[in-house]
Image (tube, rainbow, N blue to C red; front, side):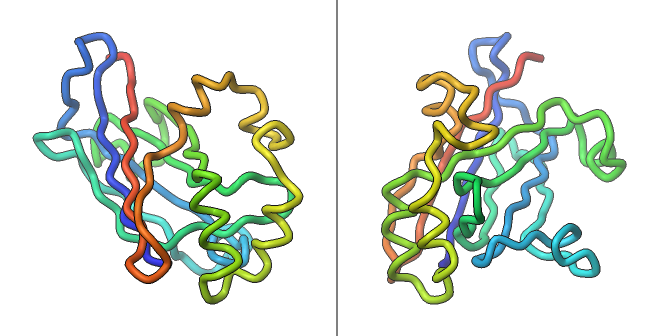
Length: 166
């Protein structure tokens, strides 16, 4: 299921001014809930890093992440001050996750090809039982959930703004 995700990085200490030149590393599981470099240790897929442009944005073209047992569907990301810093994998400015919108999960899993495993896993988890998202307030969850539009036939487009204090 094609998914295009645009992230906008802003400085919360400066009236949400754009932050150009920062690197954002994004990764997530495949349709079956497997991660490259983890579940599939010898493979590298569904991972990428991009540098924010003058509008402080990056756009990733990927697939909709699957749902594995015990976790709400999500994407991981790290923000680094530069691409050089990102390639070392150290000193991330922020490490967090995006919670996939429930409506999109409910539309994708039972109807898109290849997400069979995700149907039962998604039915057995909630944001309040997830071991990461359950610690967050409703406002925090809202900030961590991208706005998403689209369909199975057209694919999905998601956007999120990430604020960091610089």
